[in-house]
Image (cartoon, rainbow, N blue to C red; front, side, top):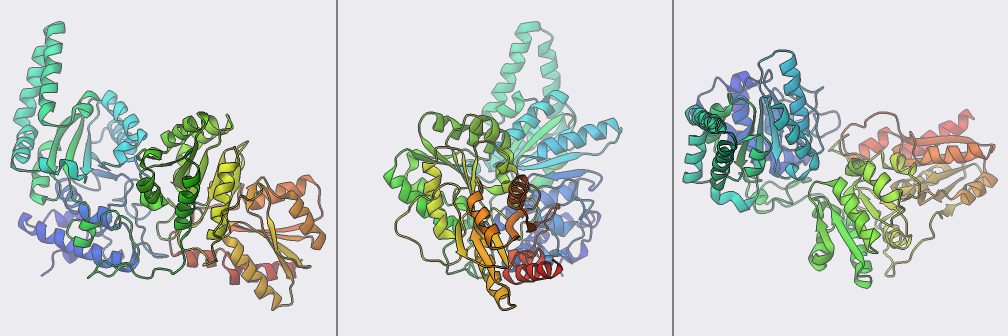
Length: 619
């Protein structure tokens, strides 16, 4: 008889016998694997965190005690244990539950997440709020080792160390270089040092030594550092945390024992646990990077399903960068812990001395690139569009203000699909367009991307090249890469009834929409604008000679985006025009397959044509 179906909330979990917990963890893994194979998702991290999440809900009185996840991509077991088993099959599908914790979804999702390094700050805020309200609940932050490379995590730690409120941080470490610490000795020492008797003795000894002024204080510091010889927690100790670990995070009983010991320790505490990414599913254990975020796959083999024959935009960027770097040794590439996701892994392997992975530290990546550019090199910073938001100040202050030639390759721009609102890159055209000196471009397809990348390196100005996730449009790739004049678009076809100004990956659907309109007797022109900034104003003026009806199409929010740029230009020149802007409304876009979201917001060819046709009839 299965254990998981009997658990509708954590209170049910806390009633089952401890010897059933390993079986429960195995059932959780199987449910996660089967569902992820059909829906895609963050598999490896969720499999590795099963025992941590189960133990936390078993030991603590959730939701009164609050668990805050960092990034949240590891929280699938959390969803299954907190009343969402029936909905779990819908995870990441349109109208279904999210792949990340969401406050509106469950009282157990205490803080909405999706970007890294946020949990410590949020959890500390909750802990202080608890103190002010004179409540007795516990606050636990679950943070991955990768998230600890983000500067915000250290900002929160130094503040927590100063405030000294009760806060438990679970550092989930799945890096192999410390796996040897998870053994009999490490387990025994961790258990010993987390018992209340040892904690009390240590506190008494430290307080005793501090009585002897400088000599005593030096002795106390020396004792603390001597303890850190056996335990790699010196940094945390110096920042005001009590450090324990490492402990085997995939041993459910070990986790429960240690959590029981540390749950009532006063002040900020870090519990260092070691887990195996992809635990319990061999393909994910063998290829943790591939299975970090995976599409549909065959459970038996681990092979991906539904791959497109077309080269992806990411692959086009990667290949073009290698070609350009082979001829220019000033080109350097920077990523924030996403070499495979951004396509920089090939550059890393071929030009290791010119490749830099700075960890989850987008702010540093941007200013580091500014330093390279100020010294005459040609840096490209490859980020997902949604993570570029994190270094806005550095872009504005350190790069654009000095007009430094840093290239930003913004992958996953526009709708990204099932990861949802935390990952949709639908704001970049708006927040970049306002920055002086910035050049903002979006290729229509994978072939144009390679030419715009060369344009970017030749531009000698801050250059933002944004392109979407996934397969391109299967267009022929030119052998020779040539720069495109900055700010110049291109007529694709002319028409007398309406002109569609399209940008980025909406250019090809706009051409198809024009074809559909022709079947309704509407002759529509189409322009591939290429650049949001600077706008090709001459091309817009030319479009007005054919028709005063203009349509803009963008994979971005309408507020402040490409359509706004066109409207501003036409209004400022007091042109006689009628304008329809197609893009996303002033709201966060839900998760779902990209094709369905394009349909919903009239950005696929068929709905685009219908929207334009109805608009023309109204006029």
